[in-house]
Amino acid sequence: MGPHPAVAAIRLAVRRVLHDVLTETTNENRTDAHGTPPAPLVLVACSGGADSMALASALAFEARKLSVRAGGITVDHGLQDGSDLRAAEVVARLREMNLDPVESVAVRVGREGGPEAAARDARYAALDEAADRLGAAAVLLGHTRDDQAETVLLGLARGSGIRSLSGMAAVSGAAGRYRRPFLALDRQTARKACLVQSIPVWDDPHNTDPAYTRSRLRHEGLPALEKALGKGVVEALARTAQLSRDDADALDSWAAAADSSVRDEAGQLECAKLYGLPPAVRRRVLRRAVIAEGAPAGSLFARHIEEVDRLITSWRGQGAINLPGRVEARRQGGRLVIRQG
Image 1 (cartoon, rainbow, N blue to C red):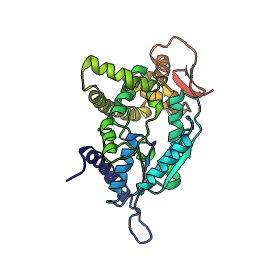
Image 2: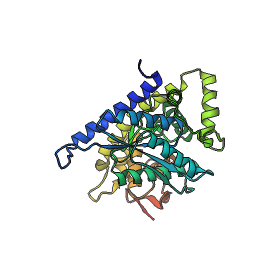
Image 3: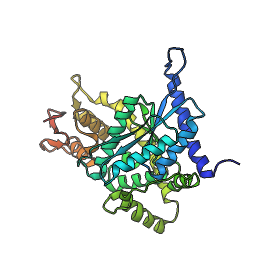
Image 4: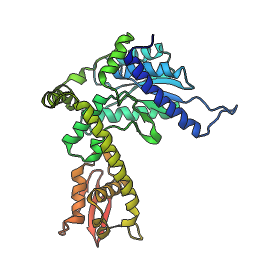
């Protein structure tokens, strides 16, 4: 008799990702002193919640059957009393699964962008540092289809454009470091997999705290949508994410190709040539240019780019536009000049 359907589903999702990692590392033609390709290290980012514990269990099971080393990282954000003890418990449970190496990394969460964004930034910085230090080929994240639906709705509420509607990518980060095997699986599948395997999980109280936007969306917003529109909202939002990602990727490629065609010999952006681009492409060129001059991508919103775009489409002699990162954009002599002030 095979494993429970939920367990089979999470293992299959992880197996596919591990095969991708193995293929990529093989294509890099790296070998050890004996001419044998080294077993890549794959880490799981684990909070102790059902999603990440299910992911850890599937990684531990599948890695044993493949030429993959499996380890784990838990990040202690220090935002709750006893967080260090919980992190130690997660480390112990990962080691019981025979993951190695396993580490707990403590971080200090700042305030920029709000508590959720600041915690996320601190977490990814810690995961990047650990992956670099340990030489990991990939870091697995336990985001599910439900998380994807929430991300799409948050992007829609912010009015940030099609890229925000594309949600989370299955592969992201530098050199495709971050992998999300569970984006096609719902949260209940992960929780059921833990239950039938008797894996203890920790339910973060922040996930039910109405002070947090995502928590309100999860427990109030999505249920209200399903009540009004019927079941299937989560699946529809996840499909929207994939369709939006395909469109956004195509437009980003178009903008990258168009960038050099709208610059003069000195590399300055020419307003007349920018005006001739379709708005969706032009705004992407502008966003790329602003980020290249030092504006933090996470602090650059659609309204900022719209203001810069007006220097091209609605020029009335207006002054410089101040942007995040002390970057300013102004129209000067038919050129769009973007620089740090």
